[in-house]
Image (cartoon, rainbow, N blue to C red; front, side, top):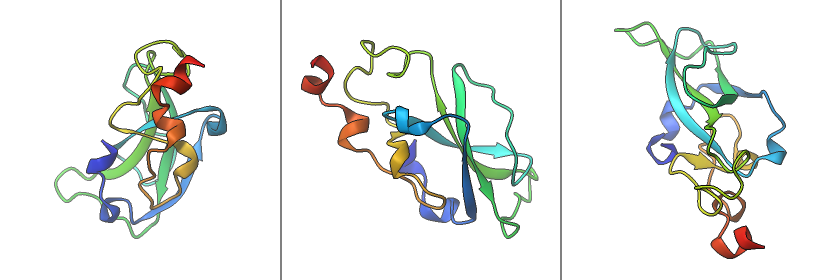
Length: 124
């Protein structure tokens, strides 16, 4: 969840790569995944689709135990608002969701009125 991502976990991010136009999305889900590389498009093993990912600087250290790097990935599930506007998240948003326009490398991003979409906005 975004609230569980701390600034020190993403301090080595140098770029966010978007695979879609995020200005069209009210929110994206974000998580820290253990990945084998600092850069490049990661494999995606969730339902739904990968929307973007972070790239790390050469200063990012791999885990001594697994040899992997913790990198942020941004994704959406099939029941998220972009594909099911009248569904579960017609108003409100998942706990790990943030407004993609609030995201930059090294910053956790934040929820906004756009990402939270109050119930009255969802009905209009």
